[in-house]
Length: 226
Image (cartoon, rainbow, N blue to C red):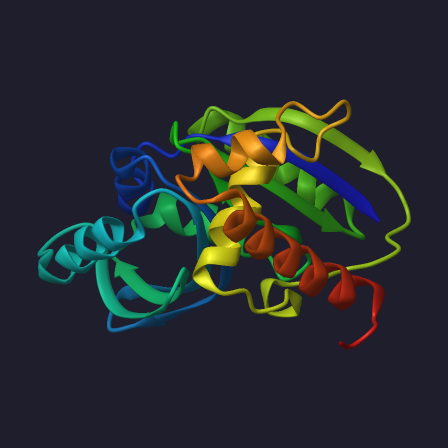
């Protein structure tokens, strides 16, 4: 299997602009697309793991009133999770890029990560090297693509967001803060005590949230039910 990891910056992606404006980070998975009455409809799901989700969702809903460009057709949210359908018209040049990036020969090895600075981090895979090479070539031309990795290896596992355990909002906040602050780095960059102060919670409360989140994730990954 050929695997490529790269970053792109899509200046015209309205959702990307809202992510950058609201300074949030999103784990985003493009599911599919279809064409109806001359418009392209894109289905995607995502999880917000850093930032003000309420303001982002409110700004996202404003796209329902769009007359031109990308328009929000449907949005459902549950805590940090959302699923949406957006649509817009696409010219002949745009159709070519849609066909490249939604090529059935390509799979998203990991969900796309939208960072606070607007950059999208992709990791895709395919049995066909050319399918990935075509995306890299188009991405460099249109999206300022920066290639981070391109190699061939055997995949031992594969997962989607739906395979993740369901965490409470407080557990999600605790585990995300710990991860982003370097708590799981080696060597560890921050103590649990400092993390609890950063989260503005008591040590015992924060410790309970993070331990329960860790227990759910490890149980899910390793395969033991609690």
